[in-house]
Length: 193
Ligand SMILES: [Fe+2]
Image (cartoon, rainbow, N blue to C red; front, side, top):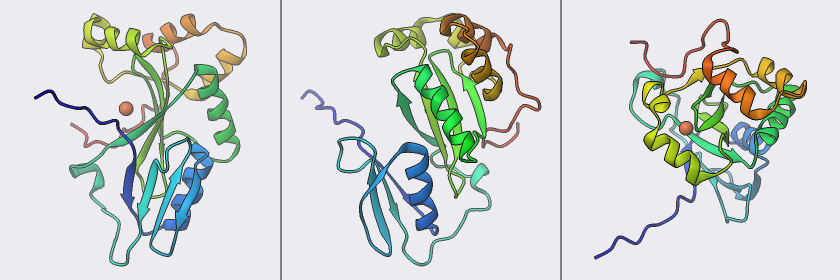
Protein backbone atom coordinates (compact mmCIF):
# COMPACT_ATOMS: atom_id res chain seq x y z
CA UNK A 1 0.00 0.00 0.00
CA UNK A 2 1.16 3.53 -0.70
CA UNK A 3 2.28 5.56 2.30
CA UNK A 4 -0.07 8.45 3.06
CA UNK A 5 2.34 11.16 4.20
CA UNK A 6 1.38 13.38 7.15
CA UNK A 7 2.65 16.97 7.42
CA UNK A 8 4.94 18.13 10.25
CA UNK A 9 2.67 19.99 12.69
CA UNK A 10 4.18 20.94 16.07
CA UNK A 11 7.00 20.54 18.57
CA UNK A 12 6.36 19.92 22.28
CA UNK A 13 9.03 20.49 24.89
CA UNK A 14 9.33 19.56 28.55
CA UNK A 15 10.21 22.60 30.69
CA UNK A 16 10.53 23.86 34.22
CA UNK A 17 10.42 27.52 33.09
CA UNK A 18 6.94 27.77 31.58
CA UNK A 19 6.52 31.55 31.84
CA UNK A 20 10.01 32.26 30.47
CA UNK A 21 9.49 29.87 27.56
CA UNK A 22 6.12 31.40 26.66
CA UNK A 23 7.60 34.90 26.72
CA UNK A 24 10.61 33.87 24.63
CA UNK A 25 8.63 32.09 21.91
CA UNK A 26 6.19 35.00 21.79
CA UNK A 27 9.08 37.42 21.28
CA UNK A 28 11.10 35.36 18.83
CA UNK A 29 8.36 33.75 16.70
CA UNK A 30 5.43 36.06 17.33
CA UNK A 31 3.62 33.05 18.78
CA UNK A 32 0.40 33.54 20.71
CA UNK A 33 -0.96 31.44 23.55
CA UNK A 34 -3.93 29.33 22.47
CA UNK A 35 -4.44 27.76 25.88
CA UNK A 36 -2.44 27.44 29.06
CA UNK A 37 -2.80 26.29 32.61
CA UNK A 38 -0.34 25.82 35.46
CA UNK A 39 1.50 22.90 33.85
CA UNK A 40 1.09 23.22 30.08
CA UNK A 41 0.77 25.68 27.22
CA UNK A 42 0.01 25.53 23.50
CA UNK A 43 1.11 28.35 21.17
CA UNK A 44 0.89 29.11 17.46
CA UNK A 45 2.25 31.72 15.08
CA UNK A 46 0.15 30.77 12.07
CA UNK A 47 -3.22 29.24 11.18
CA UNK A 48 -2.51 25.90 12.87
CA UNK A 49 -4.14 25.32 16.26
CA UNK A 50 -0.66 24.99 17.76
CA UNK A 51 2.95 24.85 16.60
CA UNK A 52 4.92 24.94 19.86
CA UNK A 53 3.77 23.43 23.14
CA UNK A 54 5.17 23.00 26.62
CA UNK A 55 4.64 20.41 29.33
CA UNK A 56 5.72 21.80 32.70
CA UNK A 57 4.83 19.20 35.28
CA UNK A 58 6.73 19.05 38.60
CA UNK A 59 9.79 16.84 38.66
CA UNK A 60 11.48 18.10 35.50
CA UNK A 61 15.01 19.49 35.57
CA UNK A 62 17.87 20.64 33.36
CA UNK A 63 20.28 18.29 31.61
CA UNK A 64 23.80 19.44 32.45
CA UNK A 65 25.12 17.09 29.78
CA UNK A 66 22.65 18.19 27.08
CA UNK A 67 25.42 18.84 24.56
CA UNK A 68 26.71 15.26 24.85
CA UNK A 69 23.33 13.53 25.02
CA UNK A 70 21.22 12.27 22.15
CA UNK A 71 18.00 14.05 21.31
CA UNK A 72 16.75 16.94 19.23
CA UNK A 73 19.32 19.55 18.22
CA UNK A 74 16.96 22.25 16.90
CA UNK A 75 13.68 23.07 15.29
CA UNK A 76 13.45 25.63 12.49
CA UNK A 77 11.13 28.32 11.19
CA UNK A 78 11.37 29.89 7.74
CA UNK A 79 10.78 33.46 6.61
CA UNK A 80 9.48 34.30 3.16
CA UNK A 81 12.63 36.29 2.35
CA UNK A 82 16.17 37.13 3.43
CA UNK A 83 14.96 40.71 4.01
CA UNK A 84 12.42 39.39 6.54
CA UNK A 85 15.14 37.31 8.24
CA UNK A 86 17.44 40.34 8.51
CA UNK A 87 14.66 42.59 9.78
CA UNK A 88 13.85 39.98 12.43
CA UNK A 89 17.53 39.70 13.39
CA UNK A 90 17.55 43.45 14.01
CA UNK A 91 14.25 43.41 15.91
CA UNK A 92 15.48 40.63 18.21
CA UNK A 93 18.91 42.24 18.66
CA UNK A 94 17.17 45.41 19.83
CA UNK A 95 15.17 43.27 22.27
CA UNK A 96 18.44 41.81 23.62
CA UNK A 97 18.16 38.42 21.90
CA UNK A 98 21.20 37.50 19.78
CA UNK A 99 21.90 34.34 17.78
CA UNK A 100 24.22 31.73 19.33
CA UNK A 101 25.67 30.99 15.88
CA UNK A 102 24.90 31.63 12.23
CA UNK A 103 25.50 29.45 9.17
CA UNK A 104 25.08 29.80 5.43
CA UNK A 105 24.02 26.25 4.58
CA UNK A 106 23.99 27.03 0.86
CA UNK A 107 20.32 26.19 0.66
CA UNK A 108 19.39 28.53 3.52
CA UNK A 109 20.85 31.35 5.55
CA UNK A 110 20.26 30.34 9.15
CA UNK A 111 20.41 32.08 12.52
CA UNK A 112 20.36 29.77 15.54
CA UNK A 113 18.98 31.13 18.80
CA UNK A 114 18.89 29.44 22.20
CA UNK A 115 15.67 29.52 24.20
CA UNK A 116 15.71 29.94 28.02
CA UNK A 117 16.52 26.24 28.45
CA UNK A 118 19.20 26.02 25.78
CA UNK A 119 17.10 24.50 22.99
CA UNK A 120 18.15 25.82 19.60
CA UNK A 121 15.61 27.47 17.31
CA UNK A 122 16.77 28.10 13.76
CA UNK A 123 15.37 31.08 11.88
CA UNK A 124 16.06 30.77 8.17
CA UNK A 125 15.30 31.97 4.68
CA UNK A 126 15.67 29.92 1.51
CA UNK A 127 18.60 31.05 -0.65
CA UNK A 128 16.68 30.14 -3.81
CA UNK A 129 13.28 31.47 -2.63
CA UNK A 130 12.03 28.18 -4.02
CA UNK A 131 11.87 24.83 -2.20
CA UNK A 132 12.13 22.91 -5.48
CA UNK A 133 15.34 24.69 -6.48
CA UNK A 134 16.97 24.50 -3.04
CA UNK A 135 16.01 20.86 -2.74
CA UNK A 136 17.56 20.08 -6.14
CA UNK A 137 20.72 22.00 -5.15
CA UNK A 138 20.99 20.06 -1.90
CA UNK A 139 20.78 16.73 -3.69
CA UNK A 140 23.10 17.50 -6.58
CA UNK A 141 25.61 20.28 -5.90
CA UNK A 142 29.27 19.57 -5.21
CA UNK A 143 29.32 22.67 -3.00
CA UNK A 144 26.81 21.16 -0.56
CA UNK A 145 28.55 17.78 -0.56
CA UNK A 146 31.84 19.53 0.29
CA UNK A 147 30.38 21.75 3.01
CA UNK A 148 27.00 20.44 4.21
CA UNK A 149 27.11 22.00 7.67
CA UNK A 150 27.79 25.43 6.23
CA UNK A 151 29.91 28.55 6.59
CA UNK A 152 29.79 30.60 9.78
CA UNK A 153 29.07 34.30 9.56
CA UNK A 154 28.79 37.34 11.79
CA UNK A 155 25.14 38.40 11.48
CA UNK A 156 25.75 42.04 12.40
CA UNK A 157 28.25 42.39 9.52
CA UNK A 158 25.98 40.63 7.05
CA UNK A 159 23.05 42.79 8.19
CA UNK A 160 25.14 45.94 7.65
CA UNK A 161 26.23 44.80 4.18
CA UNK A 162 22.65 44.03 3.19
CA UNK A 163 21.41 47.35 4.53
CA UNK A 164 24.15 49.18 2.62
CA UNK A 165 22.56 47.89 -0.58
CA UNK A 166 24.44 44.71 -1.51
CA UNK A 167 22.19 42.49 -3.57
CA UNK A 168 21.29 39.19 -1.97
CA UNK A 169 22.85 36.85 -4.55
CA UNK A 170 26.27 38.54 -4.38
CA UNK A 171 26.11 38.78 -0.60
CA UNK A 172 25.11 35.15 -0.18
CA UNK A 173 28.01 33.96 -2.34
CA UNK A 174 30.45 35.99 -0.21
CA UNK A 175 28.94 34.68 3.02
CA UNK A 176 29.16 31.11 1.76
CA UNK A 177 32.79 31.72 0.72
CA UNK A 178 33.70 32.85 4.24
CA UNK A 179 33.97 36.62 3.81
CA UNK A 180 31.97 37.30 7.02
CA UNK A 181 33.45 34.75 9.43
CA UNK A 182 32.85 35.50 13.13
CA UNK A 183 35.76 35.74 15.54
CA UNK A 184 35.89 33.50 17.47
CA UNK A 185 34.08 30.67 15.67
CA UNK A 186 31.23 29.73 18.04
CA UNK A 187 30.25 26.26 19.25
CA UNK A 188 27.13 24.71 17.77
CA UNK A 189 25.88 22.64 20.69
CA UNK A 190 27.78 19.47 19.82
CA UNK A 191 30.71 17.76 21.57
CA UNK A 192 34.08 18.95 20.32
CA UNK A 193 35.72 16.26 18.18
FE1 LIG B 1 18.21 23.11 10.51
